[in-house]
Amino acid sequence: MLRQQLCEAFASLYLDPTGVVSNPPPQAPPDVEDPINQLMAYVKWGVLVVIVVAGFVGSGAVAGGRIFAHHGASKIGVGILLSALAGAVLYVGIYAIITSVTG
Image (cartoon, rainbow, N blue to C red; front, side, top):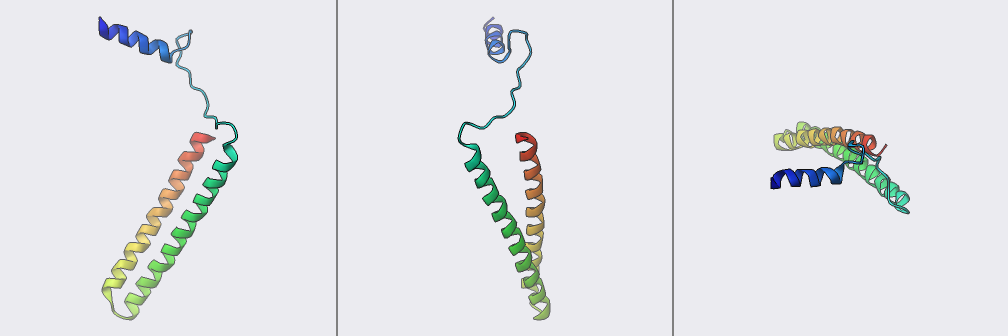
């Protein structure tokens, strides 16, 4: 009995009078869109810089490890390169998800 009343109460909160669940599009609050766009642009550039720098550092560590026969540095360089690659894949994936949600 109580369960049914709770279900009806929650259903009345989420359903419009026709019984269809409403799905409004996302909308930014007023006067927030420009600062958020600028912040996202800075974050995207920062992430790109970190990925590129990690790629160069990893390549340098691999090359230095091979040249000077220091296998520890070479292993660390490979790890850095794989991390940069994973970061690039995540960057592209997260960017695609955010743009698909926000339009």
